[in-house]
Image (tube, rainbow, N blue to C red; front, side, top):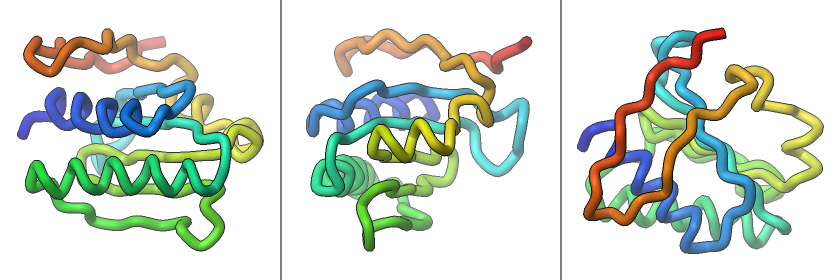
Length: 128
């Protein structure tokens, strides 16, 4: 599955559980470890766990290996490593405190939330 299809899968999974403030950052120009970071907020530890569970379930259905999952103990910040994509499911206070957006470029990559039947345009690295 290509990167754009994986991104679509993650976004759909997050939206299924009503994630807030979803942001996508291209990281291929910063690190070779992964190609993008997706950050989403949930209002409670129950919702952040549900967000992560939704992403994990859809990834498994699509035969995408979950390399790692961390943060279930508190549910304030759950990280999923899908290889090419890192997903952060965070409560708003934790997200504001750690400010990952500034670490990964400060400007999210615009991605229109298209129906699955339409092709998602490729993401270009953010250039300052």
